[in-house]
Image 1 (cartoon, rainbow, N blue to C red):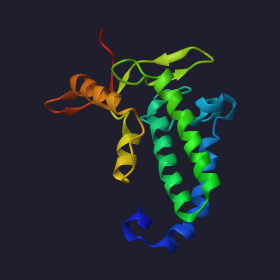
Image 2 (cartoon, one colour):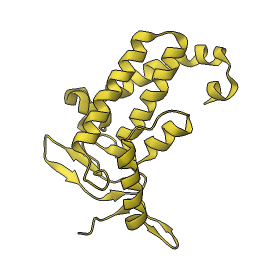
Image 3 (cartoon, rainbow, N blue to C red):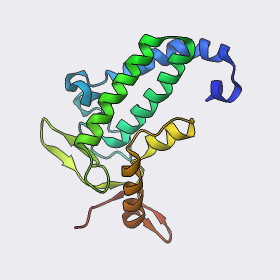
Length: 176
């Protein structure tokens, strides 16, 4: 954000290598799951500190969306410094992660809380902040990370299920 705010190419040059290494590290936290690992919690489901100490497993759209926003930002920075190979890698990771989220975690009205295909664990609890990656990307002036029509549907679902006159809930059990 500082580079974008100031336009100082020196800041980007100074922090580019650490951003690149951090992004590579993040995209490889669950390598055994291939492309699904891009939008999943780390191997062994070792991320219970992520949100409200709730149990999370495998593909987690909230975390996945944040990872996808990271990739949008990293790709832009890579293109700015002329690192086309890394920019293309970010674009490919984004494509794979997005395809996984949209193909496996979409319920028709919002995204699952999590899905671990290997064990069959999944939760359709509605997470009120599941689109955090969307606003992160947009806040940085980038295209969103979820399908636009699904963002609209998800927001309507959240309005209907997770908001009240006195505020909003982080989690809501799905009611049929």
